[in-house]
Length: 146
Length: 146
Image 1 (cartoon, rainbow over the protein chains, first blue to last red):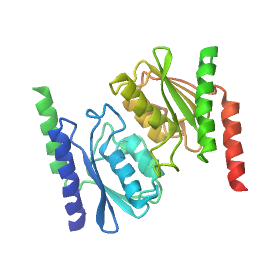
Image 2 (image 1 turned 90 degrees about the vertical axis):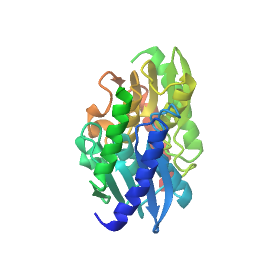
Image 3 (image 1 turned 90 degrees about the horizontal axis):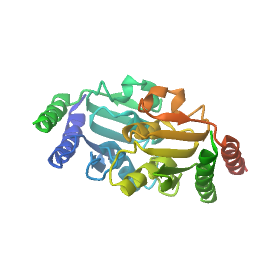
């Protein structure tokens, strides 16, 4: 964890709050390439009626358009929650260079199935600003229960 | 395997041939709901510069739009090649009722990682018209090597 990671995770948290405001499970992501944010995404599965519209998937597609190629080997994904199997599979195909995530997801996170889902060269950092991501998720599910 | 499955797999094979004609790895899919095809897709990762543009992902998104909801519990996916981890993860989120695939994919197929990626209620049938799917893939990779 370092100051730069915390900064970009703050941008992912902004995306998560947008999802929250849209009544979506609050997960947000940004992708950084060459020292700048090239893609942003927040969970939009309800809005789009689409299970594939996770924050990471939206950001991956968008980053590839920004780059003009489908491989994200020199990019970093910041995402507020541990990626699920689907998103980890997509990140493997994209051969993303580095993944920084906030909260762990013991039920749906890829690491509960297999760490090997990701590309072997992808570096993973977890727990960055995790408390903020968790607090937002907790607040969302408490609101839903009312 | 039954005649209906073979028929719909023929439609998925048509999609795979379209991918082939577009110089994409030839994989095709259709989704059937209420006895009719509600979505079609073929691999478009090169065309769209997008690792997420697998035949199944395109079909899942399209089927959800056709239905107006993100769950595909009463639908059947026909796909010419065993789904990868990303696509299997998406099919799990969609809680698809049944998956019928053609050729197995020992390197990239979800079953080599874990059968548990799919939703526990999803029925899986494999090997339907597998030889045709394999022949098309083989033809593609031989063409690429030239």
